Amino acid sequence: MTSCVTPISCHDNATTTTPLLDLYVLEELPAHSLVGSIDLGRRLTPTEQASLRYSLLSRPTAPDGSVPTRPLFTIDERRGMIRTAQRLDRDTLCRRSVDEACYIRFDVAVRPMTHFRIVRVRVEIVDVNDNRPTFPRPSINLALPESAAVGTSLHLPAAHDADSGVNGQLRYVMMTSAAVKNAFQLVERSRSDIRLVLTSPLDREKTDKYQLMVIAEDGGEPPQSGSIQVIRPYTRAPATCCS
Image (cartoon, rainbow, N blue to C red; front, side):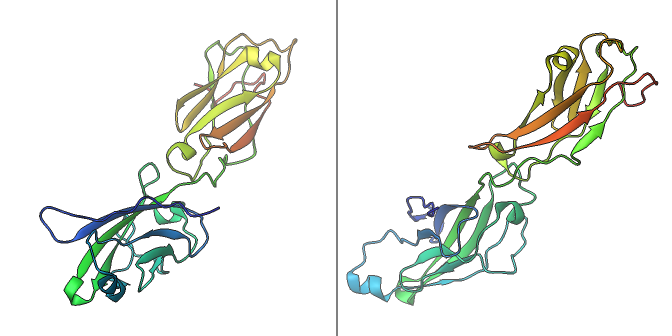
């Protein structure tokens, strides 16, 4: 995969001489991928342009204020081109910003003093769908008495996806036989509250065991999925798992 670079431009804030630069780059690109370049937005002669030197003035800072121990970006001293210093993992850099944009900030100094500027750089690390949904365990045993009333619900463990935004949004699908589909409905009350709801009376003489699979699919393109096997949501004994 090649790097993803925005059209780059620097602009002066009306109240300060410090230019601001917004860039973005996809996570998981290899080291040395191009992110963007510094452009002072001035008309410089070829000689003046050749005399410019660029350097990182501050270390990149994550949204929570932490400073990664390893360098995240490099800058070409003569051309002002910013590249990744390593493969960037958005889910590691912005653990506390799962559903928000992940911005890394740092300053670049432009010299010599005749053209001195401090350029404030903000790089958005764009999430890619590199994580699949996972359930806490591969299977679960549930119990439901034959006398259970229609509307009784069984709680299922929710899946987790480490991706952010649309890539981390999940939808659930029940895969099973027609008999089970006629007896149960899968309901998502919230992101952490997934239920199997009884929709018709149970008859042990007709069906003495139910098995089904619940699949969690994320919103990525293409989507990724994970599953959990639900075994025997039926018993003669009183159930304590229902509400």
